[in-house]
Length: 144
Image (tube, rainbow, N blue to C red; front, side, top):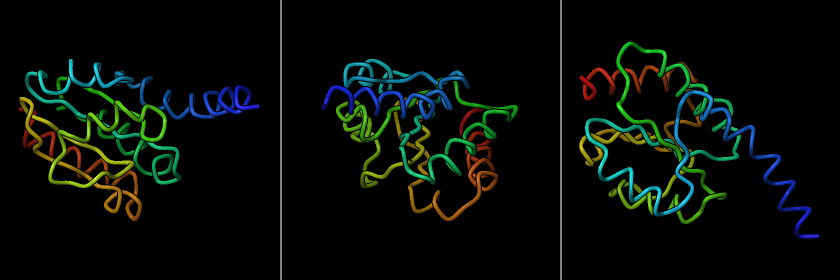
């Protein structure tokens, strides 16, 4: 029974992963993936904490997609999936202090330091366009 449930979850979640990977965002599935990429990313790195919740589908992922159409974007694009790749997500969140765990959320790092963070409460009550505008403003400030 658990094997079929696990397969169901994988099949159900894959389109949510694809929403970001089709944009060229690299999935970090293990703590080692995070450790190898996040602290050592030269320049700027966007890290999207993906989630199965409605605000991830309705606002977060579409907002990120819109923001990545901007003329200025981060050098590196990463994602971890909260609730699915739990260890990788926990490792990524170590870089987001002082912010508490939040999913979905979006972090912008510059040379390994957190410079901009959008928490869940700033995603769930805003439109995808608002989130995209927030991100593009941060891209203009930090990614040049």
